[in-house]
Image 1 (cartoon, rainbow, N blue to C red):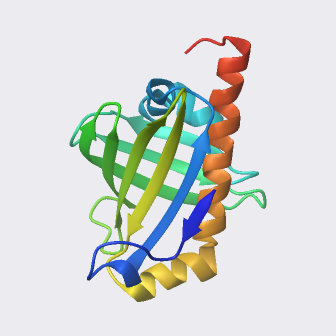
Image 2 (cartoon, one colour):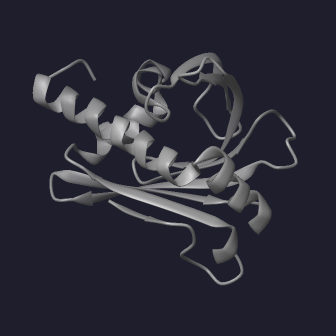
Image 3 (tube, rainbow, N blue to C red):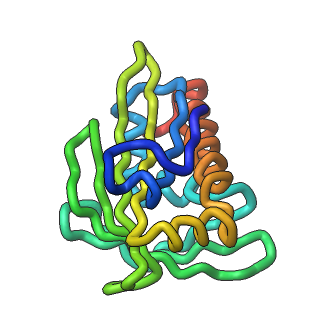
Length: 166
């Protein structure tokens, strides 16, 4: 698994978090795990978190309005709007706590085939380097991203092994 606090295009590196993971499942299945709420509710979030969806419409301009409950019982309000969907290669979104959140960050997920497996990369670009640093220091964004992709891997690899309903 690869992770960095900054990595790519000039001008945004100090505002980025990048987390990636190799997943032993076909790209189409890994992509689908992001597109249907019945899948997301099974794996989304860091270890010990649960996700409750209030609204979900997977389309450009659609919204996913949800809460994540931490192991200590704290609820974190979350809101995503999809800005680009290129199945099964790429999903781009704006992610904040609510509609019009001035601190919302842009996120791009890429799904690259690696033989019969998939490499998922999550790139988050924050409005400022200070917001990126706060996400890392206060909310454990890098470790949380690693855990979230680990949960995704366990979930979809379990579907593949068990021949589960996709």
